Amino acid sequence: MKASWDIFCTVVDNFGDVGVTFRLARQLVAEHGMDVRLWVDDLTAFARLCPAADPQAPQQWHDGVNVCFWPKDWRAAEPADVVIEAFACHLPPAYIDAMKARTPRPLWLNLEYLSAEEWVTGCHGLPSLQSSGIQKFFFFPGFRSTTGGLLREAGLIDRRHAFEQDPAARQAFLTRLGVHPEHDATQTPTQLISLFAYEHAGLGSWLDCLAFAERKTHLLVPEGRILGDVQRWLAVDELKAGDLNQRNALTIQVLPFVRQEDYDLLLWCCDFNVVRGEDSFVRAQWAGRPLIWHIYEQDDDAHWAKLDAFLELYLAGLSTDAAQALTDVWRNWNAGQDMAASWTTLQAHRAELSRHAQRWCLEQALQDDLTTALVHFYRNWI
Ligand code: TRH
Image 1 (tube, rainbow, N blue to C red):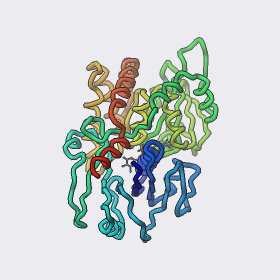
Image 2: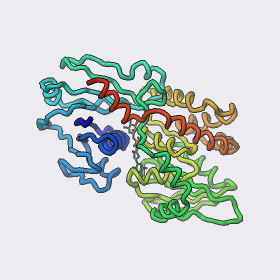
Image 3: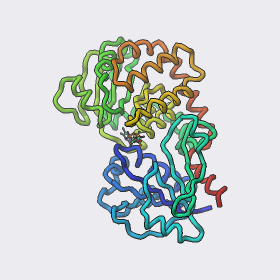
Image 4: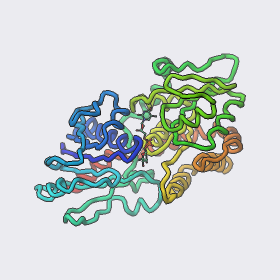
């Protein structure tokens, strides 16, 4: 059943807020035939993910999504059947009034940030009566069947498998990015690692490990916050997309920030991915490769509980040693500490971690994806 949806997104910082909401909006259109307006208060962040976008346009269409600039001085708009405020952003008061006046009343949802913490399962789907007299429901993405699940487009895992079995497609993609890892048939193949992370005081110790390892590494670094640390370690003036620097066994290449679909391909090409925030973290899980999660730091240190809660779920099924090694690497990385000892220990478990990452991906893919869960929630509500 077709319905109209309004998704409101405030860009707090970085790309996760708009990255998640645009992904959700596209999927609602493509897979569920919904009419979707995505209201974004900062179109410059959006234009990085979707290079065809015009950051100045008050309204534009992308992949069937009506992307609208959300101005500070709100202009009246007729509310949709379903209204999503992403990550507890505040809807314009005039829009809430219009929701109240509408017949039938819209379904009002707050789409929360992703967390593996157990309390989420108790709060997922709960209503709360607002001062406006309308109920708002809390919708939690998550890794357990008692939550709203994760964003996953239909056929995503099959597309990845097909890509993995098509060396020409992989080669073509890397060539398009200008990536040519060193190839010597007599040696262990060069490993590809992608690095999308926040600033990290201990990054140099990790780069030292890669530079002095036996196996060669080609490190792919999309332009972003980590570049300053990479630059310091390389002792170069300024890094920009296209730059290539080699130090012993380590080649570091700076990539342009690519469109969302290409970022998936990048993750699928790599043997190991360092990701951050929320959306790249989920995409790396769908890539089925071992990963480091650089979690978004919160003022009250709430991110540590989130990190540990995810590890508790993710580590199930790993040997004790591999689980400990991964925990140490993730904790050291997130504390900005020296990585040498923990990264070196982790190398002995790489094969097990690779198998585990694939298993985890397939297990998670058994659940309904977040968009389907939202559509079901709406259908059950009306
Ligand atoms: O950009 P982020 O750090 O966003 C964060 C998180 O969402 C965090 O939870 C939130 O509180 C904070 O913002 C405000 O990381 P995230 O979530 O991984 O979003 C990055 C997006 O950028 C994701 O959609 C993938 C996309 N991306 C590209 O499209 N191309 C690229 O080249 C790269 C590196 C990323």
